[in-house]
Image (cartoon, rainbow, N blue to C red; front, top):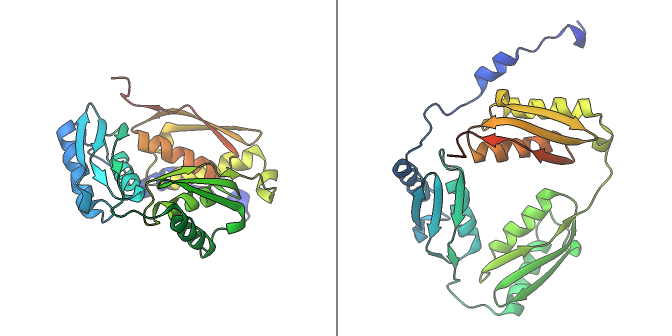
Length: 246
């Protein structure tokens, strides 16, 4: 048997995917779900952020002592079914004051000891607890990794990530649009967060265009990630979120 004789049952793949059957829609239910999530997230638990929900829009207020906790709270809220927008107004106030010089040294050590980053590519400056990252990295992963490490350094209140991603010529860049579209389609089908039947994919010159209607902003964002994972060098996201105009 050769590859031309193999048939893929896409409906069979659909049956393997996990879908949320009873989305939470009422504001009070959304609030309770977010607060319950915070209880199980050790990054957020001790700070107990205030949660307000109006028509699916979540507002977080309160104080945390590090930016990683603020980011985690925002992500927890965004990942809650029924939420379509998050206003993260949490304030970061470190428990102890650390000098800018000490903080720069600690950041330098964090980057230098990390297996994923090349410290020579990243320039760090600190001004009154605020960290600025500049330079070039090789991928979106490295850019996000550097920011994550910076948020964990003691005394950091805010991180401004101005790292630029260098264009690296790889074999992937020579893939045809058909190849990329096929790989994106595979990523969507296997994703536990996206209903592939709702997303239409077009690819031209390596640029993917997503159209259709999805159930949430979380699903919309996940589809973009799937497109990049499938090999797109850029993604035009025209997905609409169901009932977002109400």
